Image (cartoon, rainbow, N blue to C red; front, side, top):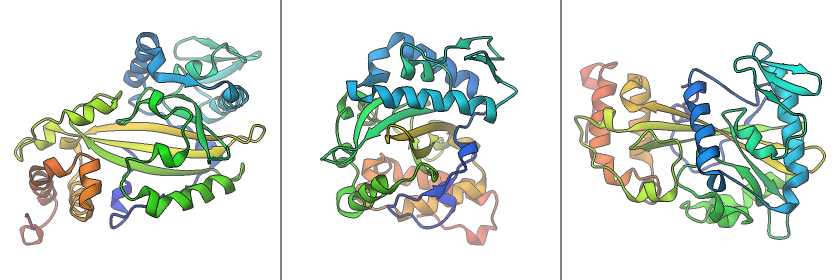
Length: 298
C-alpha cells in the first residue's frame, strides 16, 4: 500500500493537501483485477446505488470522461491505446467509445477511481454527479445535490475548524494545480462497498486476533478543476490491506495516531469501541521492530 499519511506526524484535523503532478492523477496496482471485478458487479447488480447524477452535471460528466480518455494512454501506454476515436484496453480487448451513453458508469468499468463532480452554487459547492462503487460509510443518494457543509455534517469538528477553509480552497482551485490528500480508517470486513449500516454493526475485536479481524483502508483522494465546465472532480482511489500485514513501523505510527485522536473523532471512525484491543495488538506488532525497553502498552 503506497499511502501511509499517519506516518507523517501527530494526528490533526486538516485537509492535508499535496501538489499533484497531472501525469500521476490516476493509480492502479496489483489489486486491479479483484477491484475491477467488484466494480463491474456493483454496476450490474446495484446501479442505482453506485451511479447518480443531476441534469446540470451532464457537461461536467462528458468533460471528465474525455479527460480520462486522454490521460490513460499517456499514463499507462502498455495497457491503453487509441484506435481511431475509441480507447482499447489491451488486457481485455474491450473498446470504449469516445462519447458513451453513460459517462459515469463507463468510467466505473474502466478505472479503479471513484469520481464525484462538485459544482458551484449559491450555497457552496454541491455534489451533482458521481460513480461511487466503494463508499466509506456513506450513501450516494443521501448526498446528491447537497453542499459540502451538509455532506460533512457527521464529521466532528468540520463545521468549526474546516468548513471555511474548504470553501475557500474549492473557490480558488486552479485547473493547472490539482492536489491530493489521504484519508485512512480501520474496518472490520474487507468489503469495499460500505454503506452507512455497516458502521452500526461492529464486530467484537480481541487483542490476540485484531490483526486478522481488521483491515487498514486508505483513500487517496484527488481534486482537480475541469477547464471548460469549471466543475471540481473529486477522485477516490481505495486501498485495502489486512492489518496483520502492516510493518512494525506502520503499527507503531498507527498506535500513536490512535492515542492522539480526539474522543469524538475516534467514535466517528469506529475506533473508540475497539481502542484497547487495537492498541494492544499494534504495540505487540510494533515490538517486532523495536527494543523491548521502547515498548509502552496502556
